[in-house]
Image (cartoon, rainbow, N blue to C red):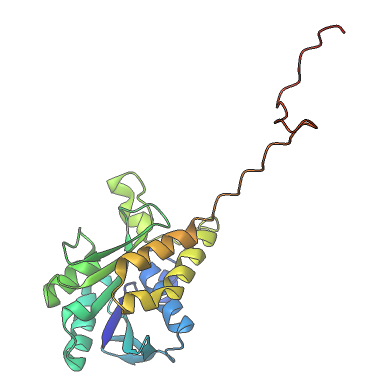
Length: 216
């Protein structure tokens, strides 16, 4: 059994915040894989179903970010899920907007949701880091993460969420590197092929610049 946790803050005022991209990703996964309706449990909302032959629980803690670990730990204890079978989806300041990385274990880098999960379960869980970009000034970080995505952000946010949901079975199968590669490919359209240069009647490549008039 796999426990997938999307991090965010509850309430309509936070719905489209950058800090809530973990919630958005959890919703996208539940929709794409028909995991059923979310129901209230473990101080959060939980949906469940089967993906790739494995039972999957998707949890959105409703404790506010800085107490997310309490909700995650309650679900993990109830279902006897070890940290190694937990995946946390969260916003990442240190990645450019639209970029994604998968990390297994490690520190919390000051993220309040991860910090609280560390306190309850330790560090040995997987994380899907969803880049929201850094405002460039440490003093602006709080305002940045608690602001809504802009209209201009819409296309990359939707493309990222779609790619995460589409390729989620790779995460279930622990093919993390392939998952990250597939998401990156989905967000980077292929370059158009260069058109071949036209040929002269003699079969030679035509010049791309006009020849000088020699007066003849």
